[in-house]
Image (tube, rainbow, N blue to C red):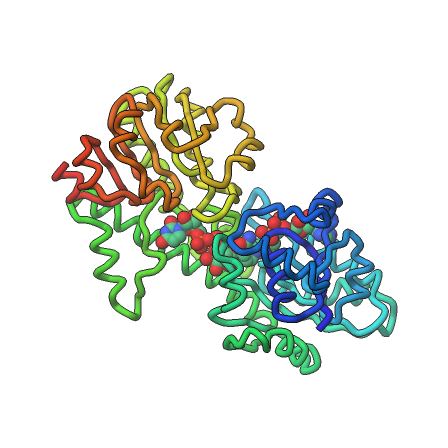
Length: 438
Ligand SMILES: NC(=O)C1=CN([C@@H]2O[C@H](COP(=O)(O)OP(=O)(O)OC[C@H]3O[C@@H](n4cnc5c(N)ncnc54)[C@H](O)[C@@H]3O)[C@@H](O)[C@H]2O)C=CC1
Ligand SMILES: O=C(O)[C@H]1O[C@H](OP(=O)(O)OP(=O)(O)OC[C@H]2O[C@@H](n3ccc(=O)[nH]c3=O)[C@H](O)[C@@H]2O)[C@H](O)[C@@H](O)[C@@H]1O
């Protein structure tokens, strides 16, 4: 089928490449001319495992191309996917101006029937607004349908998630549009859930909020573990073994970050308030999450007393492993706060160094060429992102490099017993028993 994706960022580009891989003919549109130019030159602006090869393969096969012309995109695709940003406003509610602008642009170029699919994460009832906006600005009599098709990919495993999704959610009220949507997803052989538009939109915010709730639940338990002398890893294993609960998303740490959870939880709170039903449970999820970084910094302060002029090594800047995305990364917030207290930070990330150079405080920290270089002369090593290469570091060399052997493991990546054997003092998250033994 002929498909168009409007917005060639994280979701747009990965989705476009996977649709092309499934045999569709895809045009990815973006109004950022520089981004389109670099895509046309064969450069992939994000690091995502498998993406570069997929894009190159499908561009060569002439199933995938890029343009900055929305008109060309609207002309090409029988189905137009909108994958533009839906960022938070100061009060947590969603800025829908990108969505509105695209709806108007599509309307301007509509000449025959199109399905317009909302792939961005949006508040419930946005589909109605999109339809209304297009109707208002399109030529009279032009036919179209609006569908909600939320995206559940995770960064770092986006290609795998898109090629083999747990489920596809399609919200719509037109048989014609639903039939086209089912045809698009046929090659993926995944379970398809068809709903009304409002339910599909709600599913997305509800899913992300539930995952964030699981993370805050284990982080709150981690605090109890620390005080009571239990080990949160064992507790997670014990509760996660119950199939009704599941072990995933029960990794205690510095809290959730990234471009989606913080904004989507804030958005769902704002949406619930607008509906007159404040979702207070999610406020607690947020405050537990914010507390994680505060507690971690308190512990570092307790160990070092004063942070000013102390050399602190930070491993990891991306918001999670296998991505170079530093948007709303907890690791970045941590560095920012250490810098604000006058600490001398040396940081290293396997993939995010280029993006780190663009951070506002980049000139105030040392961006190191390797994990061991960052640790050179450090009084504390902080692990902020659980990249696998940090787990296999040469502990003898690390001990040699550091000024004092103190590790604050914000992602429970290392084995406490193993690091203690090399003479390190170790502190993880929620590891009361281990801390006592050490
Ligand atoms: N990043 C992720 O892992 C996921 C994101 N989402 C949702 O998908 C949406 C997009 O997120 P990302 O891809 O991360 O954002 P992004 O910022 O990486 O990409 C958005 C792209 O849209 C382009 N754009 C903005 N206005 C445009 C217009 N009028 N015409 C053409 N292009 C335009 C921007 O230049 C940018 O390249 C958001 O609603 C997000 O919540 C959903 C699932 C996963
Ligand atoms: O809407 C979105 O954009 C996406 O948001 C998340 O995906 P993503 O943000 O890429 O990454 P996750 O793996 O969910 O991690 C999010 C954050 O939670 C943290 N996390 C995750 C799991 C865990 O057990 N503990 C934990 O602290 C991670 O370190 C990271 O900071 C969801 O998992 C996707 O399904 C969704 O499509």
